[in-house]
Image (cartoon, rainbow, N blue to C red):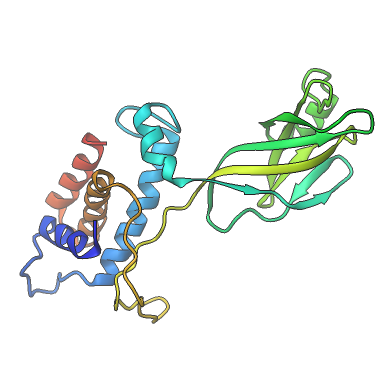
Length: 233
């Protein structure tokens, strides 16, 4: 859906198509509300805080709706005493999905190992647990997230030869050509449209309408936008 249609739909649902009063909606307000709506909608779907309680990959619909945000990148970093620590997470990082790793030791060739996400608070206990500690023989270890970095634990039992992170990224922010951002005072050079499918854009429009209606204290439009977005999710 192009940005002209997106603006038209938002103004239509706010009853602002031909309004000359003080409640006129500026283009930057539409951009800000829509981008905010994208983030809020994605976070709800990932967490399962929606009408059907379907979280990340909880159903075919969730898989289909959110797959566009999945991204994979190789992890580079440094070896510490007990773990491999990556460089800072990507700037567009939103939520962890999984870590894939390959390990090698002096006695055996390179092999893939399974990496489980664990709590940083339990790292030392897991290193002492004979059933959950890093093991090259069993091909298993765990990782934690701390300081915006991934730590994959090896406990000095093997070396990691390759490590990659699969994660959900932030949705691409829309921009409207010529629209001036009041925060940066910069005008957008070109249109950047929403990357989601048109059926999801329709839901995001209702989300954005709800946000804008709340800002201008238009309760009827606020309730309609909120209810429509969830009912059709």
